[in-house]
Amino acid sequence: MNADLERLIELEKVDREASRLTEEVASLPKRVAAIEEKLAEHKAAVEKAKAQIKSNETNRRQLETDIKGFQEKIAKYRSQSSSVKTNDEYRALMHEVEFAEKQISTCEDKILELMVALESEEKALKIADAELKTEATDVEKEKAEARVRTAEDEKLLAGLKAKRAELRSGINDSTLGHYDRVMRQRKSAIAEARDQKCMACFVMVRPQTWQEIRTNEQIVTCNSCGRILYYDPASEPAAPEPAKKKNKARAAEVEPEAETEAAPEATSTQ
Image 1 (tube, rainbow, N blue to C red):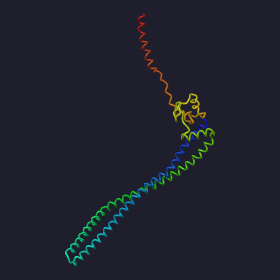
Image 2 (cartoon, rainbow, N blue to C red; image 1 turned 180 degrees about the vertical axis):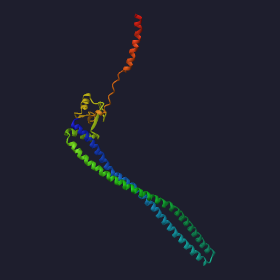
Image 3 (cartoon, rainbow, N blue to C red; image 1 turned 90 degrees about the vertical axis):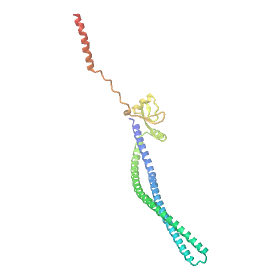
Image 4 (cartoon, rainbow, N blue to C red; image 1 turned 120 degrees about the horizontal axis):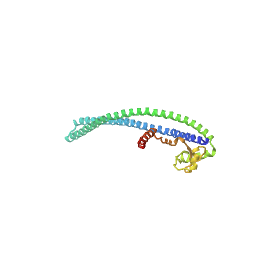
């Protein structure tokens, strides 16, 4: 095989792998950011559950304070009722007492509702907290794996960079320039030729060009896509098996039949 062609085939393999690793390294920070965002969602869920519990406690304390205030008012009104001089004044005080008692009842109902809600809020906090701990463990594990993968990829990239430089240094400048131009335009610069066509763009090549490609001794480019073509004999379909000869045994069976038919003729002649 032409030395430049052999190096070009290997160079494209190196370039493709380097491109894959570069993309992987670039994607790892995004992956870490995504899992950290997921962790932030779990943290937010925990904070929300804590905030609901805190609000619940604040509301209950306020209601308890309100009840205490209404109870003080009732005590005050009852104390005043003993010194009133008219029925109207007495009824007015009793009306205030009744109103305060209703307010106390309303506050007690709300406290009961909050206490019932508190049970579900504490349960939600417990679940959110457990999920956060699990997610935090998973995130740290994934971040560690990402760091290891990044280090491995960067090490491989360094090796590929050295190999790439070595391959490029051994290729003819004009051929290498053509490879680079096609690589920039089409993301691949080498293509196998099979069945007399380019396997990248599937355009047929001329018979003379096909013969040149099959030798792998020249740099031949596709007239359609510009890729450098090579031939791989392993891609050729297997040659059909030769037709089997007729069974000799069958031929032997025919010969006795002929002799049997000839026997009566000899008898008739005598």
